Length: 382
Length: 179
Image (tube, rainbow over all chains, first blue to last red; front, top):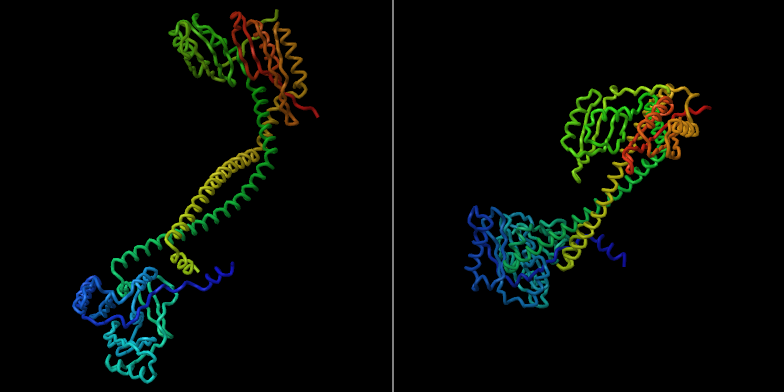
């Protein structure tokens, strides 16, 4: 159970799914292409040529072509659609490319005057390159059943004569098969030692299927690749998250060590803080004295008669908070002004707390100048 | 291997590809959400611990200075005249009685000590008294300064009889622990 997926992964990527059609089903021609034509212009020229060559309209043909940029000819091939059964065409929906057998060999780099002979059980095809990347002639002959070696040889010689003078002849006895893909940009076909590399741009024109179906297949492919990229992105994100988890785990250990240090130092620091508090309190007790009655006396000395003190509390050494009330709110301002005029007072703040039953409660916060406060004289001994 | 996996993925049905991709994206989102929470907590903890360590370093660096400050503060006091918690309570009680304070309530003493010095604190509440009595008690306390001091003072008019006063005092004493 476990070994099977591993073996699958070790086996490497599978070859692309290609439907290779019999050469005998197609007629082929090399048609001239206007010099300097672009790829879209070549499409128009090829379609015109196929329409001119074929007895059927384009809509009733499966056709494709091979053209190399800069080349002044294209190899076109076509077949009447009814030569293919519904079962055959239905099987094409599951494959990536559909092309005749000879088309798989067009990606090879061939010297001028080279002929490749592709033999299958049923056909013998000659592909002749006079010069340039586009073949000049492709001829296919059907082999009779139970053909003898002599008859096969005679057919071969006839094909070689028909294609023209050949300086190099390559005999292929194995059917060309797609090789495991290393990249999406090309498909490699191999027949024995012979290799043909067809780039994606060439494959799209070699495919004989309906152009609308091809466009839909390309869109589906692009969508699938997009999903694959999302999946890969997710996998990369998972790897990154795993790294972050590891970093967090490492950071947790570091943080734990720091917390141990904090906890170890806490009692010592606590003692130092207590010592600091003690030092402050001893300093305050021994050098700075709270003089609450003196502060109250100073504030009371300016109190208008209508103001009644309710509560006085100290805050720190030099601040007195007085809760008071009055039935004459105007006197609060007078009182504040009078206090501010005192040399002992540094700051006076009044917080009004609304008004109830003609009484106005308020809080007075008086901050004294530390050096201005003088201890009151002790009462004379009685 | 990636090419193999890619080919296997692309060979699946569209709904299978969609399901696999969706599951992968959901996994990433859930994981990220969890990790983000952990990360935020970690960063907060690191920040808090860093601040604590910085504070501790500061305190430890100032240890000698604080010790010196405490020694200096204590050196202003005469060890034999410093007052422990028992004497603080008894002296304050005596001064209150002498000043004529009635309705006096004295709370428990609280002690803070570092082994060498101690500060003892008590809360005193006197109700229904008058200004002159409070002044007498205050003057008496002040005469024991700096060994006894007032740290906080509050005075409020009595609700039943506004001519009388209620006083709250926090009184402290310093003790130099004799070895």
